[in-house]
Image 1 (cartoon, rainbow, N blue to C red):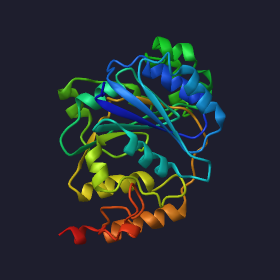
Image 2: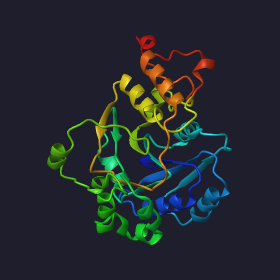
Image 3: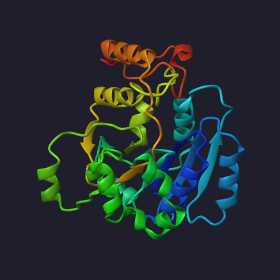
Image 4: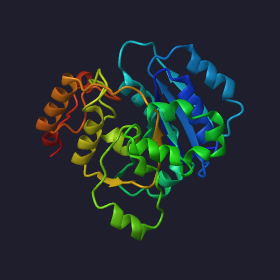
Length: 284
């Protein structure tokens, strides 16, 4: 039976993190979803985990993989987008643990021609190490934690306030005054708008600056609005050392902005080979 939405998880190794994600997904208050693990060349542990858990999970999981050849996350995201069997896609990274109402919040707040932008709690190294499978399965990890807030006060965990969830629209209208700002680890959008811009730009060959902003900019040229899901769609990001910003990403993104490219050249389709127009000017 066709599901309502597809959760696409971008993964590169990190088997413990994926196991925690599966535990969190087993508790989702919104159950009508499928999962695609977009695997950018992990070792055999990820495949073994999925194979071991697949029959016991209450949601369908597909594992898409290609050999490790450097950073090709966007290639796998495009493959996952093509494989998705729903019209609405939610994206997270493989080191982010969703709150019980994460998918519910994305689904119930969707709007026509809108990109929903969530935030994340950045767990410190100690809190990340201590997070257990039992704490995720029981939901204890998402309840008020003095240890987490103390870790935040000490500056080890950051954005701890993003763990607060407010459903009241009036309260959120007071607290959330700015438009959404995309984080690649927590956003959702109708699949047709991603298809319109030719998906994710595969010319990004390194993580960091540019790859997320690229999607938001090109969707914006289509008139897709960004809406904040701050204090909803809560996500807990496990600690890892900061990712450096690569100059090549910055240069690529600046060129796309300058030329106002709606469709990336290398995405779902290779427009260079197909000789299709890619810029805003070419559409008018």
